[in-house]
Length: 119
View 1 (tube, one colour):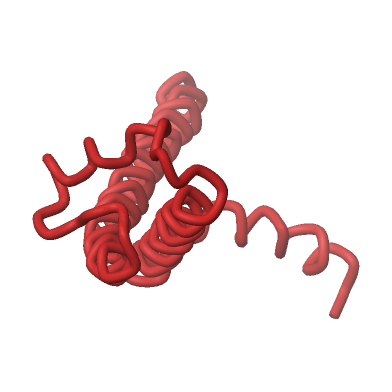
View 2: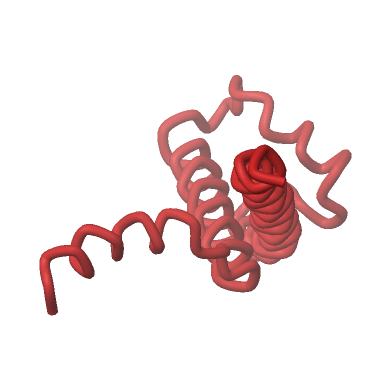
């Protein structure tokens, strides 16, 4: 590879679209692990449950601050996190595409200005 190819590669990677499924799965897994760890630590460290994790049962059907609740909450957070991550990647890809098209149009207009001056 030439040095100019090496310099262009990081820029091309920065503007590459995000994989929506991978981003969704990553978000889902992170949220599922966080909820499982927080619920597990709440069961072990805080048996009086002063941390109001029971409020999550209003949003996550079947979730309880218990060992079976960890499984239910993990499944819910995997699903919800996947949706959030997928949507975030979709929005980022859309905004980037619109920005690149606008930049391309601006560059074309600038290039045609000097052409029209010679007519």
